[in-house]
Length: 134
Image (cartoon, rainbow, N blue to C red; front, side):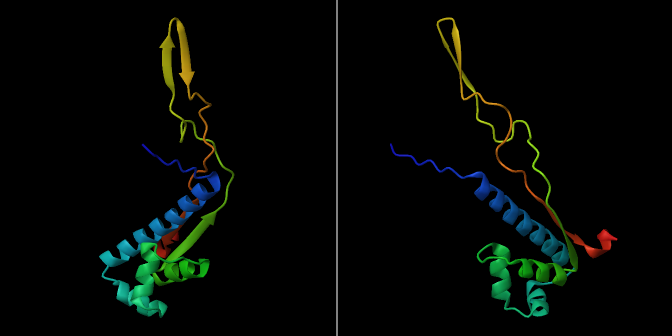
């Protein structure tokens, strides 16, 4: 039986967590605006872009530049907060599972390692309502 093992490094993991976090924040803001009656079409018109382009950006099918993120926040009536801070190791985060085997009177622990993560935590990015920010 064949299997594949993909090693996703810390760099790619941090990038995907950051991008996913930004998209999640945008979608939360969009959901709030939809509840207030704003449509994607109205948002696209405000941004002067085709609705299909806006939909593609929000669905993750096209890249979001910093300018596009800023424009979306503006159209949604939101401010962006951004923070870079040193990583904090969190015990147990993404640690290798430990397995023990007993052979005779000897206990062997396989996969034991310090309980700290080599993966970065999700960066702090929030897109907040201007009314909430004040």
